[in-house]
Length: 120
Image (cartoon, rainbow, N blue to C red; front, side, top):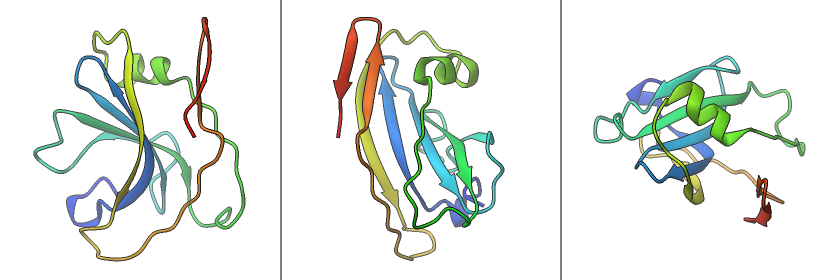
């Protein structure tokens, strides 16, 4: 499972907040949806939190829609003082199991009371 250092390979969408915390959304092979954990890489443990939004292989190869309340997730799991999002990025980590991963993202947007911002 991705919450163990030796298997911490994943593809995700990450969000960086103005308090230095990162929050990523992953599709796990084994961990149940809703599982949230701090990064098992010691340098990143104090900075990065991951949450599982999809699991298993049943939907692989199909387009799926995902919508998350990023600030609600931040408040629930990180409980910090962030007020703004600084960055959104895509992550691909394969250094532990040395395998390939493939994913496609489309129409990534951030929405706030003041409007929408298309990311990708």
